[in-house]
Image (cartoon, rainbow over all chains, first blue to last red; front, side, top):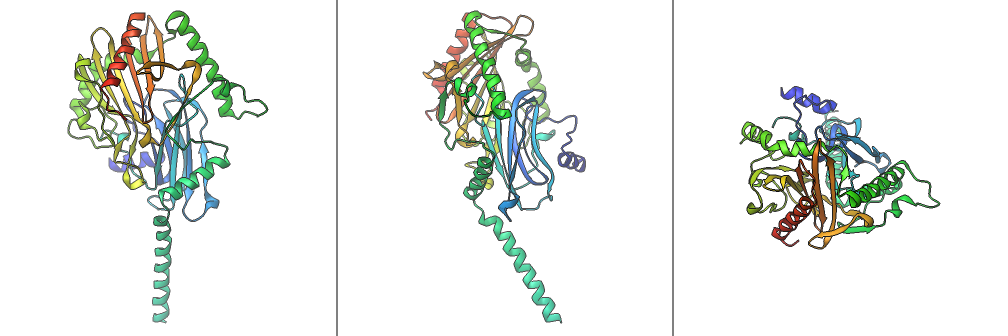
Length: 127
Length: 276
């Protein structure tokens, strides 16, 4: 089961009983996780979200770049660079800037996430 | 030959060690600096403080002489929608639209006990499930929440925002926000959300035309949305230099009295919080 979950996490394919951000909005970033990524989500609750994910490489600024999803109404806004980072390598650091366009505000990120590792995010499944 | 191989091996190990040291040499400040350079290169401006900024809607809509990018154009469109919603609310007391959040809040008292029972004692700190109380939730700060006397029934507490970690250079271990669900007789089914912007490293920019000062004379936003079929959500947000807070209460009916009651409840919750 753990292998299935790990594979699902790596591929970005969620099991059907996924409970990420089940009762409210949650945000995270992951680095060196095969993918480098920053994600905002609330299962089944579409909002007008935007995520900017910056990916820095410790071996050179020339590899630094970012992904900007732009705004879109969705329950899962994901800025993902697929297959950019070998699993559990250490060369990338990732920061996520999470925006929500909502009545009265929206042009500034409501949360930021900065990581240098592939912490598996337990909220992705039952426990 | 063996000596050469040994020297080559040691050299390789030293080289790897030097590479590994590169990681530890990069501090959070170094990474933040690099991030800002990437953002600046893409024309993305991120405020460095968590303070509240209040600007006119025209700042979003009239960018004269500057070709708008897709995000600016999107925000300009949204701003027109928000101003129209404000106008409708001032005229009719609420924005007439379907509001599925109302039923969800009203049903939560039936759903939450199942989840709390199923996952009791087995949840990790990072899990996003609802808990019976904030004592079961690992937060990176002290969550005071809703005073007991303001709740007819306490439904539970769930995390909101990001799970922060000291190992990543954050200021604490735990969630940077929480949402508390409760029932309040005469008002409805409510959710109180709190987000610690200092932990989140985020500011807030509010639209002057939509800002009221209904909660403790702090910058606030009030929006009532719904219809008779879906029910209504009465939403109040308010801000200080550390926190963004929000109270949503769902009720099948609309009335000006309910609107006023929700604002009063928001004020009582605010007066219960520790000064930040």
